Length: 318
Image 1: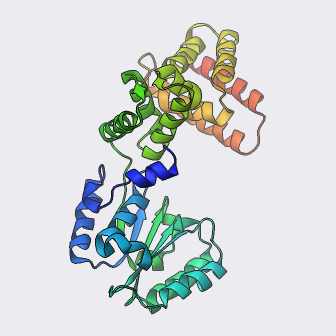
Image 2: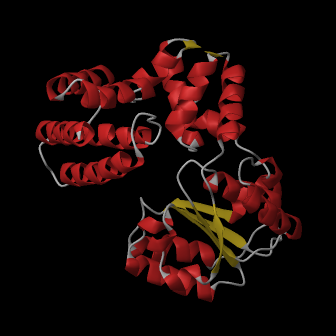
């Protein structure tokens, strides 16, 4: 389940891509016509943006697609000089094997500086006849408007739970790993639609034991199980500050959580609490946002988490 495994089992054509029906429907048209404008793939990580770009290139050029493809990670080469040299040099050369155009794929394009994006915009104008750009990013708002207006924008969504489940079950079967049903559910919960994160969680657990259980998944991903988080909230309501604080310390030590990890996981689990009123959930959401901001800005972790516990106890006791 290394990078080589992922590359080997990556969908080879656009029609093999799962979980992104809206994007695939449009990409199929480009694959058949073997012609497309500049493209911008935007969406969360692990949802298939790079896979879609590689599959489209393979559909257009066949097995020799890499001869007419330049793949760059823009977060590694984000400066103006990289765009002016490497990208421009590739764009100005003629396509090989009788192709109508070349493809330049810039992954994580939202990491490019504004100067680099300005230079990229000019290159996209100059070489539009012989070169097509495919840009992928997590946040399209960080890509300047002149580039967005020159691209057909594709929005990739987090993968549905059923698709993530089927993929990790398929991977575990190919790799000869025994995956418990509740462990698969835990991976889906942790990944939140990010297939790359799901496969990584499976790989880390499989390195310890070929029989993967639910507890192994939570242990190896530094994630507290839902029942532990619910127990902490219940302790805040029923048992008071000192008992809740002890429950908090047990959570942090047992699962190796950082302060921001705990706040984010607690926030996700907050809305599954049956014993909290709607008003309490609203108040606690605002409180968690404040504590998260303090932690990010450098506030002391122990003090801030104790303050969080105290405020939750105070809020739920009223």
